[in-house]
Length: 116
Image (cartoon, rainbow, N blue to C red; front, side, top):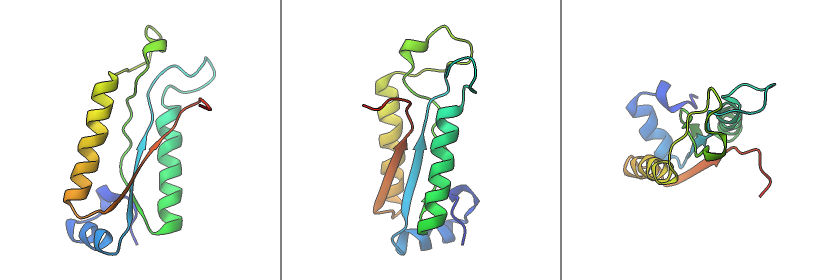
């Protein structure tokens, strides 16, 4: 069974929604993560977790939202920040699209390095 939504036909996506699959939306920024880590670490981690969770539970996962609010990291090469409003509107638009497509269960998975 396929778990990555972009590789599904619309018929397979419909079947997944009808069986109650959870749609997982990984979110993680592209920004400076210290001199030792890749700038895409946050979205790569959230995407890998979404993939594993989808395969283990029969859910589906989407491509990651690879941009976040990175105001504190402005100026570091590789940091690609968007406004909080834009991130919220993007997440909301994705969730509304999933609901309109019949997915009653959605989850956005935000990866951060913070414990708050």
